[in-house]
Figure 1 (cartoon, rainbow, N blue to C red):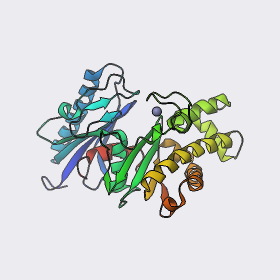
Figure 2 (tube, helix red, strand yellow):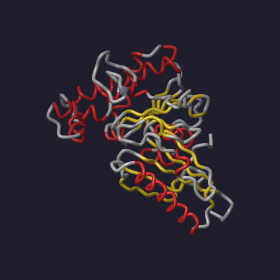
Figure 3 (cartoon, rainbow, N blue to C red):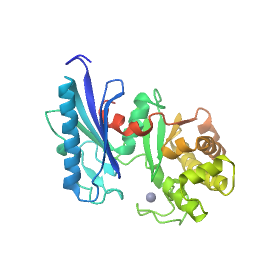
Figure 4 (cartoon, helix red, strand yellow):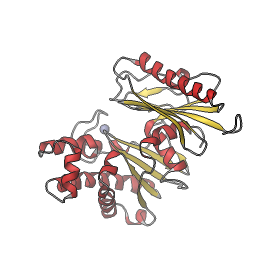
Length: 305
Ligand SMILES: [Zn+2]
């Protein structure tokens, strides 16, 4: 890349366990990639300093290579005010994170800074470079410890009136069901996240997700039943969202979708049985394409669309 001609972008993806960060080229390719354990247990200050030092490290790499850094973007759990950069909703994964101003914290070298919720970063990455490329409307859902959702409307990330659109994981699927950290009961993520699946699987004698998926691949019970049930909850929650927004695409991602590919079809079947028929005419249910890199790539492109 010639000096000064093209920009590279810094993307920081803060999760409950790791901080992933990297330099991303204008075509969405990660040029430099790093991962460290996020210090989420010792208060705001230390974690903010981790973010700052990650950004400084990347700035110095870019400077060595004579790349111009056009933007710093950060994705974080919890609710993030996209305009001010302030985290205003606490995340169970990072206690005490509420109140930190990510934009102010990462201001350095006169470079524009953007901050958003992590699921929105994933959706943006899939929209620009992945499975939702060219889509006018899509719901990108990541099935992991929780269930994250990012919504694309009119070809852009739709953040909602108070920056919390797309929270599909907190759709009620069981009236009066299990208590959720959000304050509701019976939320989708209490039944269909990987954590929920592990809990159910342990109760039925499986040591971990690997043991469960191995058994399900051999079509053994109760593995098949457990995963069918998870897919049914997912499909039911998604069908409600589909009825509301009539998207072109549902993009399903997360480690478990990769570990057990038949899940995609199971979820789609459930959706097709439940959603309003007219909303299914153009619907595509597809697998996320950017995997683990989506958070970093999306963060690097915040503010570009
Ligand atoms: Zn909830």
